[in-house]
Image (cartoon, rainbow, N blue to C red; front, top):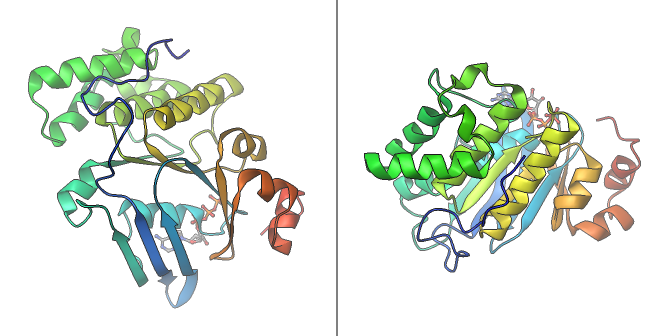
Length: 259
Ligand SMILES: Nc1ncnc2c1ncn2[C@@H]1O[C@H](COP(=O)(O)OP(=O)(O)OP(=O)(O)O)[C@@H](O)[C@H]1O
């Protein structure tokens, strides 16, 4: 369970983010080809301000590709991706101020605590600060009793909470989550959803993929719908479910679109 503590985080930046350093993020004509095959094409998208964007679409639509391109893990083969905020031009700042949570958490062969302090060390935090910050984040996510346990022996749900705690400690301006609850049971899913809401309250911009329509309704402010490598619509969440514009999104929300 998440701890009923303030979402005001451990650091001075945390009482609601006032200024963006990186945002807005602008994608212009983004495409990704593999062996000549277009897997993403002509994606134009501007992500600014606050809120939670949920990226939806059928299997193989290109959602994960888009998330990895946004996070900087993959270089697009076409188009331009620009962080337009005042510090968005610096690679070091782009690396430091955004985080990503994957469907299967990526954990180092170290304790839960060391997984968080390692990430903080990589971002230049001093040893003393690291421990305090890491313990505060583990406590926030109900993981303090497991701090010394090897991260890789934690259950799937615990590892996902640890991935979120690690991101929480870093206080990212933007958090990308790629199907973070796909492998989790309902209780662990609820914990992740509460965590996402907590990040949002703290001012972190959320961009997340999910296949769970109920989860999208609960969490999204807006939906970006991708199908066949193209961005077909971007709609406030209520409109997406009540009045999807594209025939593909209509079929998808009815559970009829397989790919
Ligand atoms: N690095 C890569 N190189 C080449 N092809 C890739 C790469 N990553 C993904 N693909 C291919 O791109 C297509 C889109 O994959 P992606 O993982 O983005 O889909 P998705 O919308 O996230 O699907 P799912 O809902 O099934 O997770 C797939 O056909 C996949 O095989």
